[in-house]
Length: 116
Image (cartoon, rainbow, N blue to C red):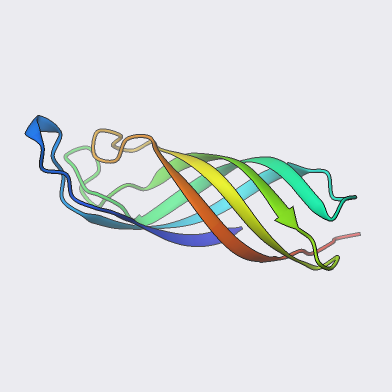
């Protein structure tokens, strides 16, 4: 699970113009990782909730749901904590004409919990 925010600068060229946006997201991700190494590559897919997304006629209160595909790597300096970097591809589902597919690169600090 992660919480994030991204800034999308305005674009005013031609018919594809849009205002600048600050989009926040709450994601729950399923991940496949090889965590027997110090450097752990992984792939993931997440369902995303966007509490502050763009609005449109189809979604007057803003984007609500989306998907995210991730390719990343963790540096596991302990069994419970890691530093990581990831490349994400976001696909908002409610009104994709307002915020189409977009990519992001992120760095993060993670805590890992084991249930067994």
